Image (tube, rainbow, N blue to C red; front, side, top):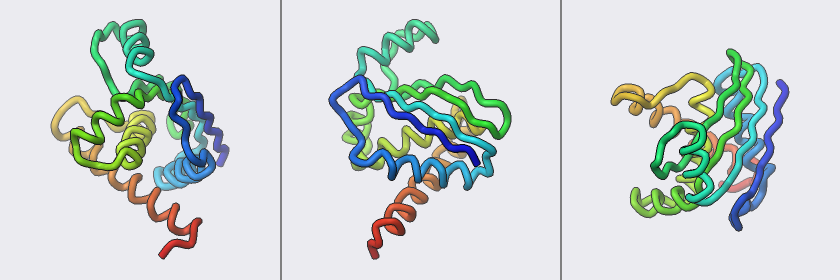
Length: 149
């Protein structure tokens, strides 16, 4: 399976180890039986993501993620913009760690490309279930690669 993941930083935030996230996303692709994965994650602040939201979706609201999906079937190709400011605030609001909230948002963008929606209660419930499964996969993979018991 062809895997390509790029990370762009438009803020002071940096992933500690991009390879860990790329390995996780590769596992997510295998979990969903994808043919290929070509993702770009852009990490930015609220102002930059709000500008994208206004320019491309005509929405004048803050959001944690925008997914620009050019996928065809099981060949996933997308640009995913994430507001680190929103992730931090949501982590605080929901009482979860920043790291897990970041994983949730990263998974959320990928899951939109796979075909999951979040426009109604049933879709949101299924999306949350799938996000949780991928977050769990991260923690299992991370422990396996770091030999943590």
